Image (cartoon, rainbow, N blue to C red):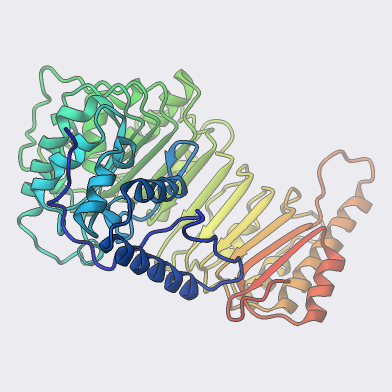
Length: 500
């Protein structure tokens, strides 16, 4: 018996993408507006054709091409769950004939997106069953207008999320990715209630926009018999309260395939299950790195720690990357002061305020990424000794900051001898003249260092790579001057789109 999705809710202005002969591939110079216009024409054209009886076989062939454009090597291509053009939901909303054809192919339904503000709860079981016995991934989210408004008060969010989770649980044995992105932490599924087996689960994401406390059913006592079996889990994204529970249950440190851990949204405060300490996070990283060697990246986002560290001999955080976003900089300093051995290869510090990054000693991070409006950037850069410096979305990266970088250099000692690459993204408050002066000053400093010690084996690197994306406009003469001084030069102007 063929399943039909005749009750699917309409989707506003649905569109489809395809590179098949039914929708010719877009010319590379077409603008996004023109591309969208052609897609809408294609969509309307085929709806009219179907009203005159477009054969199901032809429809199926079209949908196969659209599916192929939505996947890569059998995996769904990541895209925003807020999009109204998701396949297969957009074409399924056109008419019953299209829904019937789509419902006949289980692999079309192996990515499920549930929007608590628009998806009918009665449709969720239909979605889950359409994929038959295939592995699937599912995302439960809200409309962007709710996620971006922290003052939104929707008493139904927690109850709706609980109903959706209850519908998902019987299918978790074939779930590959489970993602909840909701407004409030109290609405998220509580990790201690996931007493289930998920042998194929590779990605678990329980994240929120606001930390408003515990799930209402969470008590102070740990469950007596709890076993969330997910041996294939590689990517774990938890809000702070669920991560604290994971630490108390000693669950995370048993995940031998874990590569990526993100802890977000924790405001502190006294709650029945205790507090989340910085020690808890660093100890998990240390144990995962020592025991299994597969752990690569730690992300901390908008988390308030008490800063208590109880391990006197430090923590091993020599992993591939650490990203610290909206974290108090005193906590950042504590993290790197407590490490044993080298720092992570890549350190990313992002902040929406304008904190001072001075005195954060990241001397062993090969790549340093500073994102946001930092103050006293020159001081932080001059006590870093890595290879690649990346500046992103930083209005305080201006000519004065660039001048301060080389004016603070010690003439008798080369600052940051390993530095050879500078990458700048979405910054427009500096000039080409200031950067050319920095490059010339660097070249002079390197030459002096080499002249002082011609037998030294230590690296004395010139600034060889400059990549600017979304920068200020420059003249052709400036572009030539950069090319004469550098091995690799790229410059994309934000205002004009011109690339040099």
